[in-house]
Image (cartoon, rainbow, N blue to C red; front, top):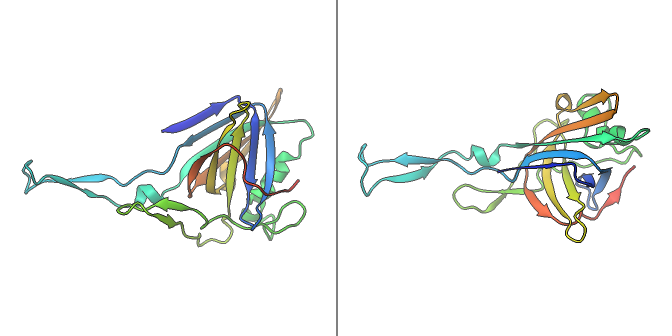
Length: 205
């Protein structure tokens, strides 16, 4: 199942894994979001009794790849005139660090940021118990948690996406006569959960 929201009013926050998480935020009146509602489960592989469909017919679990594979989370939103959001987001999701423009991964005020990779769990295949996802081998690949809450009056709704990696070539800015659109496309390696409020943290601007 995939979730798609268009044109809602709300707020997007991008968090690191500092003990009291640091975050950058974007308020929006028009944003598109598309994402699955969670990771997949292993395939069920049919096993028959020497080719015969009888009482011994059963399934065995296939590889755990569907559990561990990341899924796409995409956002697009308009930037206000004079907005510094695109520069803030660039630094916060590690685009300049991953592409070699910055030697270290920092917020705009030079505070060091901490990757969220290896901080969430996905349910294992046979047991269903939560297992923590491992770190990447490439130190330039850093993950963030992404949270979005849509303004629904007294019943705000939102999602938390953990361990999201934003590859530099997959991000873009589109200029048009009526505005500039920021397009973000991340790969979620962690959990996705429903939320009604943001995680407490310290905002960076």
